[in-house]
Amino acid sequence: MADHNSIFIGASRKPDDSYQRAEELRLRYGNRHGLITGATGTGKTVSLQVLAEGFSNAGVPVFCADIKGDLSGIAMMGEAKDFLVKRAEQVKLDPYQFQEYPVIFWDLFGEQGHPIRATISEMGPLLLSRLMNLTEAQEGVMNIAFRIADEEGLLLLDLKDLQALLANIAERADELSARYGNVTKPSVGAIQRTLLVLEQQGAANFFGEPALRIADLMRTTRDGRGAISVLAADKLMMNPRLYATFLLWLMSELFEELPEVGDLERPKLVFFFDEAHLLFEDAPKVLVDRVEQVVRLIRSKGVGVYFVTQNPLDIPEKVLAQLGNRVQHALRAYTPREQQAVRTAADTFRPNPDFDCATAITQLATGEALVSMLEDKGVPAMVQRTLIRPPSSRLGPITPDERRKVLAESPVAGQYDQAVDRDSAFEILQKKTREAQEAEVQAQQAGTGGSRWTIPGFDDVLGGSGRRSSNRQTVAEAAIKSVVRSVGSSVGRAIVRGILGSLARGR
Image (tube, rainbow, N blue to C red):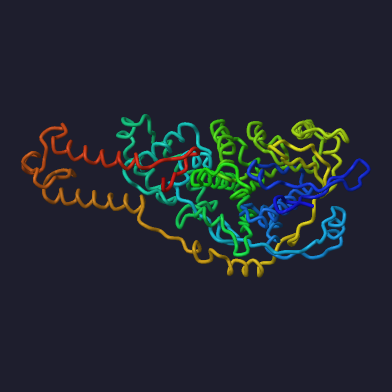
């Protein structure tokens, strides 16, 4: 049986199907990442639930997405059903104790959990362009928009801030094109239309304040267990690009905010990325390369990333090579691609002479998997055909009343429930527009014949009436604009973005 330094996963079987030994994940290698794969209905969710329970009991906070609602049962105590008790006997889990776990429910739409929000500025142009599926030219305009916001001190908090900034950029297209390259109104218009679609799909709920604090995902209870943050993702999956971009942003935030800690006795946080194929589907090479870099480096921050997907081919080879702990459930092999997936999965394991890995993958029963965890010195163990242990919490979803009770008792209750809308780019640009209109009206009423501005104390330089006789920039205007540019530049230099373009806060 596994000890307090490891997580008991199940029991491997000998060729005659008799008990062989306990299979476990060593906590000291929990930050070496992992992979759970298998066809629909083969037991991936239960394997995820078992690992989440084990990490929580070891004092490691967990974040995972609940795609179908089944994982919500981890918040409730399990029940002694016949098939669960039988499996416990098969894997020699004695005593088989039931337990409820400290769960915090989250929901980007704020319906089945506490709202999760991020600001547009924190998301950054790279991830936002990925979310909006922008062309290369449109992504260039998005990068210019963020550059202008940084230089002019415009806070981009929600969608209306970005919409206001884009409208301002369209009005200044000629001026900005001279400074940054071609900024076309059609490109700006295309981005604005995409923003409208995002807003209709519910993305407006995600962007805003109060923004999620990473510390709230890394809570432990008074009895030393790690909190399990469960993201309600059944509705979110209707917009899979938003789901993938959000999880990528979260992984980026973890990478940017957490300090280097090296190898620990146990991870500081474990992050389960369900439906992982959505992250890499149609992703540009630059994004895949940066994800691979984050996965490789985040290990030293004490964070373990576990990808959950149907097919190992869904994960790029560079990322796949970083995943040390593996649980492979059954795969179908009817089509050429499925047959290739079986061969790929088999080739990633350290072979076991007792059975053919590729054949076994197609014959695994529900709740059975090929398991290979890291052993001493981080070397993968020989693959074993393993019966996965039954979970201690409830198998299946919780009721709406039970969810409401958990939410009411949550340690973050009331912190994120009400959105905050402070002055940001939208309000600042609106104010500037009103001031410009008022100045133009005043100038016309004063008979200046234009909508130009004046500088107190510089009337003699501007020609007495504030009207300039030529189109050349005066000394006064040059001085004022120089000051504005230097202030803007200092703001821009103070804003630092991380490896995936998200805002590096507090550094």
